[in-house]
Structure formats: C-alpha cells, structure tokens
Length: 327
Image (cartoon, rainbow, N blue to C red):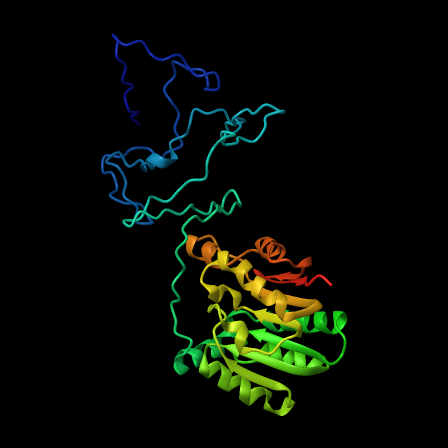
C-alpha cells in the first residue's frame, strides 16, 4: 500500500500550529479515505466526479475555518449611556426654499420630516384644475366624493347637531357652496328650519340641490359666487347660521378666508354661528396655499370679528370649526 509523499520546502519554515490544531507527528497521516489503486475510478456510485487519486474532492466552500468553535459574532460596543444620534440644527436656521420660478415668485417648502408648514409667500391664487360648471365634471365629482372620503357623512352630522344644540327651532340658514345638497339634506332632517338658502356658482350643482330638497318646502337656490365682492346683495339676511362644507378653499387662496368671513358677519343675527368644514393642507406648496389648517381658520375667524372660535371635529384630515357673532 502506498501513501502520498509529504511535500516540504527546506527554505521556508513551516507555520507554527494553531492553538486548537492537533500536534504534528512524524508518523504519516492516517486517512479515512479509501486507498489509492492503480486504476482510479472516474466517478463514485452517485455519479460525482473524483480526482485522479480516487479521493473525493472537498468543495472550497466547506474548507474548515481556523475560527474557534466557541467564537461569538463580532459586535460594536456602545456605551450604556450613549444617546441616539441627532442631526444638529442651528437655532437661527431658516426654512428651506424652492428655487425661484422664472417669473421671480418664490415659495417656501413644507418640511414633512420636521412636521412644519412653512409660510407660503406666493400671493398668486391657485388655479382650479376642474370646471364645476360642466355637468359631466360635476357628475364625476359627485360619483367619487363619498368614495374618496367616506367619513363625510360624519362631518355633516356634526354640523347638523351643532346647529340643533346651539340654535333655537325655526332657524334661518345660509349655505355657501352647497354642492349637490347633501349637507342641506342632513340639516333639514335633524333641525327645525324656517328657511334654507343655498348659494353656488355651479348651475349643475344647484339643479341637484333643487331636485334633492324640493320636498322640504323651505329650500331656495341662488346662483352666485362668494368670490365676488357683491355676493351678499344676492341673499336676504338676517340668518341664524351660515354654513360651508368643503367649499371655502374655492377662494383659491387661504389668505382670502378672513375677508369672506368679514362679509358673513353682518349677515348673521347677534349670537349667530358661522360653521366651516374643509381640508387640512398636504405637504406640497399648492395645497399649503389653498387649504387652511383649523388653527389658521381660528385666526381668520377671529380677525373677521367672531368669538368663541372652536374646533368641534377633526377626522382624517378634515375639520369642523365655528365662530359666533358677538351679541
């Protein structure tokens, strides 16, 4: 029986054995592999290729490591009192700005990570992407409004219950931007109303209101635009309540809200309510300019002369807030 010869190099000293390696012996190594024959097999019974000596080759990925068997994974040491790393911000840092547009206007960015809405200093009104005078556009809006925001009925109920709780029976109500008349139907179903006036610039919306509310006997529709300075001349005050749901942003910039509320104030009886429901802004500059937060609504109502300004409901980015005419 032959054993493979041990190869050594006299000029290169052998590496010292690792602490966990077995001691080196002068005896020839003993192997569990089958002895080498003169006619080495080409493959084993399983069809795996063998080297010319007949010894099965060990895959390189299974070469044993010199790592200690009880070695632990390497870990980064952290002091017990270490604090989370924070990004330092200068105390006098200013909000980041979007580069100026070609016409020279500039707006500040909404910093979503910091949870901060920067002041929008672009005074241009935001153009509307749809024409609510188009019957097809109006129908598409009505078909999707409740699907996109299924919590709208809860907002309508909140407004109706607010009027019933704070005003006497036989109230006179004016609604600005009634759309298809869903809020009006909710109020008329829960409150004793003497008259209900609906003012909108969209003939298709007014046609829906007329059809939905005709049976009430107290609803009147008025074609008018509350963005125009003379709109108060189209209605017949005094009113116990003026309400608006998802319509004040049609002013096309939130800076106009205080001016609208100042026009509403003399239309109310003393102690009368103005109730506003609308969207919170998102993170882009367009909606920051278009939609006021409930806190900004409070400021606009107070600037117009209302008192007892309150937010009654805040749900899924929409709110109901009110102010009372001093009396």
